[in-house]
Image (cartoon, rainbow over all chains, first blue to last red; front, top):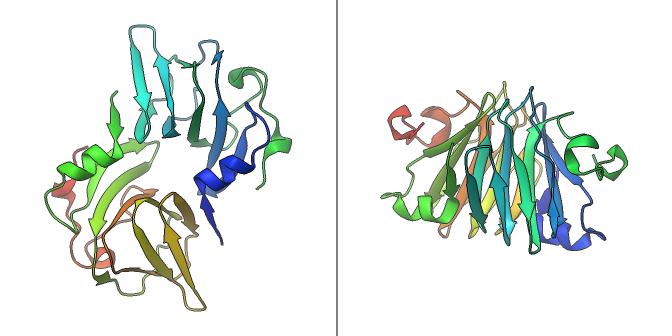
Length: 119
Length: 119
């Protein structure tokens, strides 16, 4: 049992696009990622809702019918089955929450690896 | 589908000790509460881990064998079955995450009511 300071953990992440799972709760995982200048492909999670929480910075979440701007302190739930893609222009620190196994290499722009998980 | 800015939602909460559920993800709920000068009784959640995320301010989480100080940006998972109690002295804004049905009047110092939920 330990606490995690999101900004301190993020500062210790060496690279952009490196997914760092910092905690597990029930069957869910909490993952931090710093990213910029990256638009992912549209994708859908069929087994889990997905939470985007913006620790710092800003990004957009694009859906087929609209684009939502997210800034520091914003939290948004993408329901399972809803097609979406993150658009990150300037640097943003994101906390993702979803069921274990939801993130894959295919839906993270080819950058997700189980080896990046601390837990 | 909508975004929620945690500080804006918190500023709209009229009273201390008022639990405001702002979002649901899978079978979990995200609840904001502002509190100060309150120490809850020791209690245990048998069916769900519980996440404390400190949006702003500071508090302590007391366990039977230690006390953990939490400050702005800290996230901590209390595993299910682990006895704990929050100690809040100065004002703190907390985001709680746990399975639906975990919060009750008994484990929130008598202040939880389903009527405070927006969703």
